[in-house]
Length: 447
Image 1 (cartoon, helix red, strand yellow):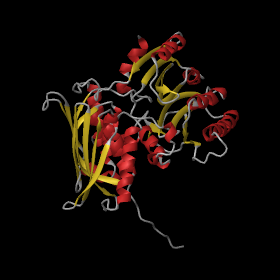
Image 2: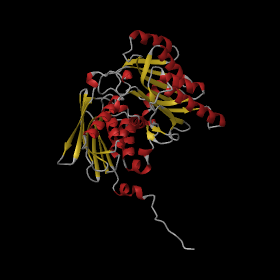
Image 3: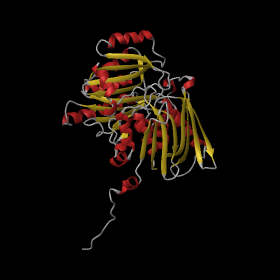
Image 4: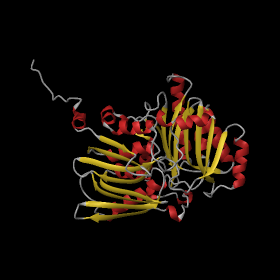
């Protein structure tokens, strides 16, 4: 019998170019008096800019300036970063993580693909099941969702919830007391999926594409929420009766011009500065299949200015007005999904089944709508945050806040604050990150 042979692919081939020309990462605290310079030189590849910005954003670093150049086969970036308080990055654990994640070890070991605590997927958070929900938003919807999970004895270990243009997108990590799925839990998962779909659809004639599904992929949580909204076409508007009226100073100005002599389309963005702004824009361009060849990022006080020289992955620039308009709308939507001009509530309590349901029920009974939310569990402690407005989309009155202090503050730690307007103010986060930067949060739990 004749033997047939197929081509052999060395499993080490994928990282060969990286091992020959390993990335060079420098964390420089000497060159600039008021910020830390993070310099990255490496082989260029699709999506590399998003990976680098994702690492810095997950460390809660503020990017004040950046210079990007990746035309040709090499990728050269310089980021000016500070911590959440506007200081240089001096923590050795943080510096070590940057050098490890962006250096040769990060690329060859898959660190950039397997960031713990910021991933969507059943295997990404240990023994948890991941649920994705998308649908039309309405007052009290998060309370209804969490009530279904509590009634079926599922605990929400982590979650991220965004709303925009009358739509809601959620990623929930749930678990049970059982260490593995038994027949009873399998049946309860089916019941849960059915009930959540019924809640999301609301009226029988709702054709808005609402659904609840179990996630099987492995994607960064914030990126996955952007992808869910993009697939839902939230950038087109639709439910204007639920849309929040944003202040004029927070309206982004996005423009697209042509750089004919260099063969680029130039995307210029001017808006109010905030945490993770660059990540949201780069994430949107990447998922729309555009490659960033050059970029300059700068923030001046409360304002940010960002300019990206892009081409489509097929090498073409943006020629049609329809294509340009879509990119403008998508970037505007990506920026606005994270804008919060509301009050925020941070709660710390012992983790238990039904905790999220209890808190969201109190918010609903006090006439509040949740615009964004996050849940983090560390050991036996749960930390929840909520950005809220009243049911009409208006700012919360002080008398309502006082009622919440009296009702919730008796059984759990409650911190209420107005969302700061400072460009450098840190964003409240939902999902837990790596052990390097959980230290501060753990100290809060101990006190």
